[in-house]
Figure 1 (tube, rainbow, N blue to C red):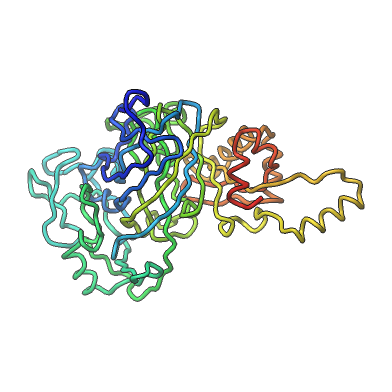
Figure 2: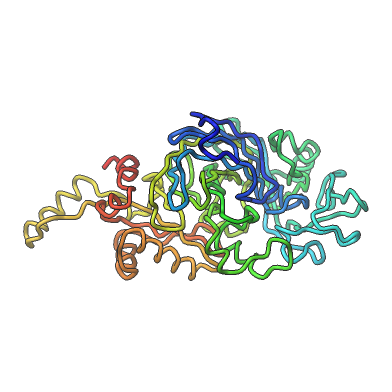
Length: 438
């Protein structure tokens, strides 16, 4: 791992390496990159491809973390998402089930071959369909996941819309899956296009790409898709090598796996630093998704990503904060227009209010095993960040914002207009000014 002193920092870095789906703070990082530098990455699909690749131990395939010069434990890294471009020609997805016997407690983390009893077996692809992934050792079909109802979707040349395909077209794509998925050269996953699902052909979809995984390295080894309070709950007391306690989950996770559709080009995400150098990583690009990701999965794609990273010193909470594009804010959390401010000033003059607070949007992420607990987590983080009571945060999120669902079972956003002076006090005010022209 770079130590931030003996290796000269770089102004930019191109990332083409991937983890084995485990984020390990003791593993080597790339870099270091200077404070303010640029990270460019070619990312692999998350979810379904890694989910049907038993040797991958985390359910996703994310980039090798990057060491950021000057990022110390207790700081944060502000990440400006400069660009997200889908490179896949097609993908496949759907609602899942986990067949009996193909895992040791958790099909995302500890897939096994029930015939030769190998955990994390090496596998290869023979043919197409849901039995195409075979164990290298015994030849048995190994499928920790099956698609219950799914689709193959291809995208137009401008990457604006997609269309789900009938059976014959899905099978044609499945026979050249890696090409249509545009799998990066360093990726080790089997493409989900191999399954050739086609249960809802002829459906037109809009593309609105965003990053399902974007954040900083947790402070203990953790399967990548479980670096959040909801999926991470499955690690508590688990029967495999990555079992942890509830206290360890709370202490070490950084909530990099959010599946929040507002984490897209133009947004700014501020992420906690729990290891020296932060370890910025990314993956699980989605072509589009409705709030909640209620099917459990969406359109996972390969793509190119450009980020700019900047250290924020002495960050007061343990989770991410998002400054979404203005168009992604709930109606009540959008900045007030000049006309609205003028009307407010008339009210202030009439009723003797000496000053109207300057307000700015902020979205505080909460995660937990279920949505109610995630809301509690988000409210508590917002209160700690802005030195408010939880009751005040509840009121502000009610009259000046909303609770939004990132992912069921337990990722939410507490989004509201906060006093700009409170944001300034924790070093975040200028990000709000930049993002919303305040």
